[in-house]
Length: 378
Image 1 (tube, rainbow, N blue to C red):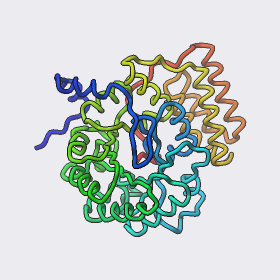
Image 2 (cartoon, one colour; image 1 turned 45 degrees about the vertical axis):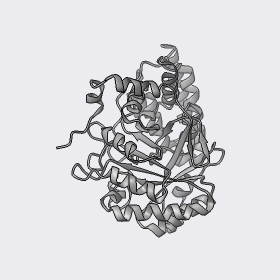
Image 3 (cartoon, helix red, strand yellow; image 1 turned 90 degrees about the vertical axis):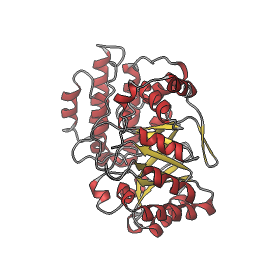
Image 4 (cartoon, helix red, strand yellow; image 1 turned 180 degrees about the vertical axis):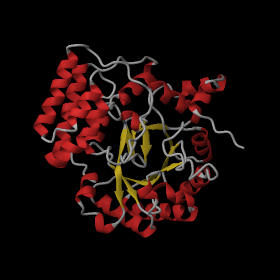
């Protein structure tokens, strides 16, 4: 049986060759996707229900070099829905604008790519990584990895649709559908051949969901098999982990998802660590107060007060999860249905916290498991 290396095993396997690789990746580096130059190789994962415009902008502001939208459906009859319109809203967002599309039919996906290009997308990302049942049951997301011909056909159709517009196509996938079908390397070669310009690999199968530890040997194998950039994703929850994953896999970039929930400054922390080897002190309470209140204002502006107050609760919960009194405050937030009251309660919570400490406590480095019923990252 083939042995796949988890981070725990990887940490005990350093050798001179690996140390040399770590030195190669000491600095965060700029990257290209087609004609687009990215500020660095630290990416925000497209998480359904999370990576909306306010969250993307905040992560970019705090050091991320690139952010991909929440997945947008390829079904034409849903393009004008409020949910899809919000997911495709990039007003005031720094480029390049990347939109992830999800679907199961090649022609439909190609049409969706063009539709989003006409709405401002500069990069199209194909979702073959989402493990959610409601997505996979429609034979979309990571379910596509079970049918290699269909998966490659979709990638080819989307690339051909985007080529006349000069828009590059990228793709996000998992290591495979299940333990017995880890076919990421085979698919990666095929995707490269049809013109996909960057691949992101989450180090778990669809069967695993978010259980156990991500493994990075498959990511390394994909990187060795293709010439296009490869992005490592899964359980990257600290600056040291980002460095080690880059070193172990040889990947061109890392993509961070759940670890950025309530901690968007993780990108700043990783960039500083890669550049200097030093760990930044946790942010000041006053800065986190300002960031969260600005985040809430942007959130209300996008969703309106009724939906905004409710959908902001999870973000507030993530910000306060590890803070003194955070759990009691989260429960209180669930009872507030007014935007002004919610905003003022958050301000008061951090004012009180600031009287007890200058900085946040050190952040735990365990990636958060999605709650039951919560939309999850592709």
